[in-house]
Image (cartoon, rainbow, N blue to C red):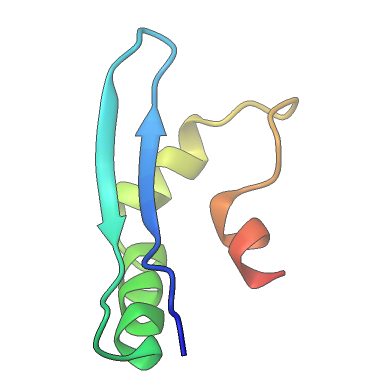
Length: 65
C-alpha cells in the first residue's frame, strides 16, 4: 500500500514560508497525532486569530473533510 506523506507550509503575505508539519511514513496514526498536536498548539491558535473573516476555511476544516 502506498501512503503519501503530507507536508504543510504556511505562506505569509510578505512571502515568508514556514514549515509546520511533515507526516510519518511509519503509521497513519502517527500523522494523525501530529495533526492533533498542531491544532492544539498556540502557533495554530495564533494563526486562526490573525485570519480575516474573508479568508478561506481554516486548515483544520480542510483536513477534517
